[in-house]
Image 1: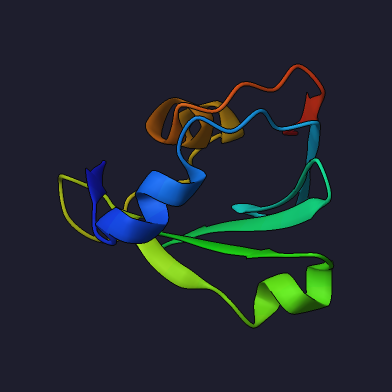
Image 2: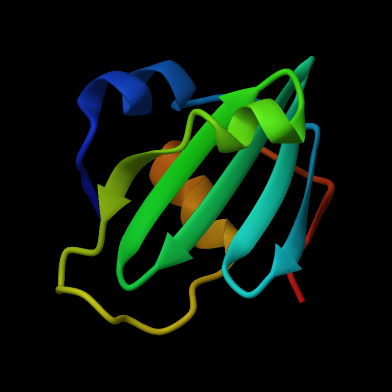
Length: 95
């Protein structure tokens, strides 16, 4: 995966994620302290939104990364997102 938005990536990189769960295919909702983070992966594009609530997070979504091999890649796991963003999280559901 390659970084698209260096500024957003640097702000969110290395966070400790308290919990995360798969809401729907390739769409995770995470908490990190007081923040909610929405992660979505579609057609090789990783987007993230951050806010004090899920609704606020949806208003701040931006493209953070893209697949190195091109568009239309298969489903990824949350561990792939964690590795790319250098996040740590022990409490996540990714089924």
